[in-house]
Amino acid sequence: MAELQPIIPAHDESNPVIGSPQEPPEPAPITEQEVGEYREQDRFLPIANVSRIMKSSVPPTAKIAKDAKECVQECVSEFISFITSEAAEKCQLEKRKTIGGEDILYAMTSLGFENYAETLKIHLAKLRQNGASVAATAARADITEVRDDDDE
Image 1: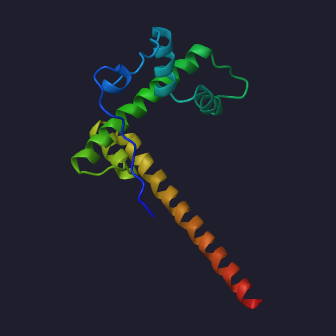
Image 2: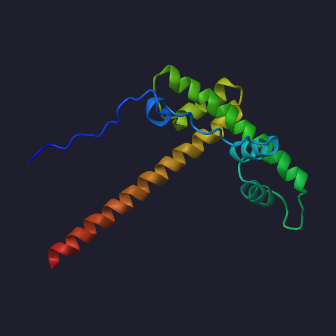
């Protein structure tokens, strides 16, 4: 059986379609309003999440103004970006691609947020302990399931 060969059009100076590469069509210009909306969605945490956290911190009868929620949304998002960029810089220097919990703790300490870093260190340890216990429980469930299958 003959091997298939790709079809390559002949180069022809007289035919503009074949002879010269076509320029891709110009994309429609993006308005300043679209750019602003896109950036805000990308840069900020969802307002619903920020609002829920804020509501959990005040008495049930308290109300929080929309501009207060938006202000906190912006501040929290900026804070996270600030800490993350410092952690990412450390990872880049160490030629790593993944930012870990210790990198965030390092960034917070080096940027002067030692008080928060100590609290987060405890939280990270509990999170890892809980993750290990969940994994162990899942492993035990798998072993039990295998034993049940062996009984049949």
